[in-house]
Image 1 (cartoon, rainbow, N blue to C red):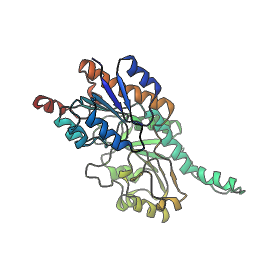
Image 2 (image 1 turned 90 degrees about the horizontal axis):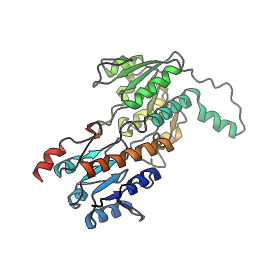
Image 3 (image 1 turned 180 degrees about the vertical axis):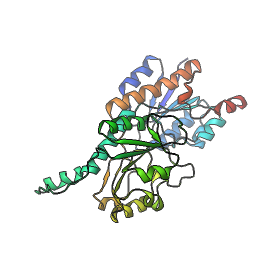
Image 4 (image 1 turned 90 degrees about the vertical axis):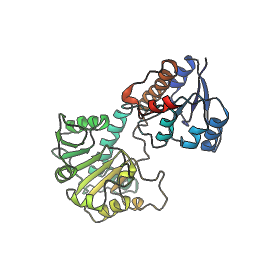
Amino acid sequence: MTSTVLITAATISQAAIDYLNQAGCKLLFLSSDDKQAELEQIARTQHVDAILSRTYKISQDLIAHCPTLKVISRHGIGYDNVDINAASERGIPVLVTPGTNAYGVAELCIGLLLACARQIPQGNAAVRQGLWPRADQGKELYGKTLGLVGLGRIAQHVALLANALGMRVLAYDPFITESPYTLTATLDELLAQSDVVSLHCPAQENGHPLFTSSTFARMKPDSILINTARGQLIDEAALAEAITSGQLYAAGLDTLATEPPASNHPFFALDRIVLSPHLGGSTDQSLERTAMMAAQNLLDYLKNKTIDEARLVNPQYRQGATTT
């Protein structure tokens, strides 16, 4: 029997499309200007066996009104856009693609760090304005201490790259007890020792920022903050103040609390904050690996009911499956 897969990504690797086509799937794509509304309409009115989701919201209402839906496969590691409780109650597994973008995000993390430490964006802007400010010194990273908040796949790749630069690596991760890197018992212990702090953890469940004015006060003076994880981890007003006051040297951010930011965002007035538009995992190679794993996840489930447990967000879906 042909399975119908609704692909909500605006763009997706052709390799994944070919893979699904070769498996005999019928593919549905979003094409209207209001893609969220179109997604909800298709879910309500058409036979959809699986959703390959990237950004648009998979709400409780959508899940409730899509009776044929069997599996949701996320194009990425985050799943903030999916109502996990609603999926679990329906017996629908939600799968993610861990590790597929780790190289790309790690490389961007180091790129942001170099841009902050050596003031590369400022130098680029100055030269384009006819200036030649060679007196701007910047900071060397050799011999400095990098503190990783979270030690998953991305952070481990960052650690390898940092070691190659001659940096000492510390990590704080309450879920890890053994590591080739020095683990600190508390976040405060890591902050007190780190010249650079890089975030590699999920947003807090309560939605509150992990890094606030009091957190910045506990960091080493003149240190650098890097965030390629989740924008909600940082109190942005407090970070702007920490940079303005000179408490922190610089910050490199690939993600913000609201994306895209408002045109009057305070970060735009601060050249010591280097920004990129959440493109850490958006290399050609990362996107193809991610799309292929997302496609494999849903095909494995649709054809054989098999799941890689390391990719499963909601093991509790099995309880829902027994009651539906």
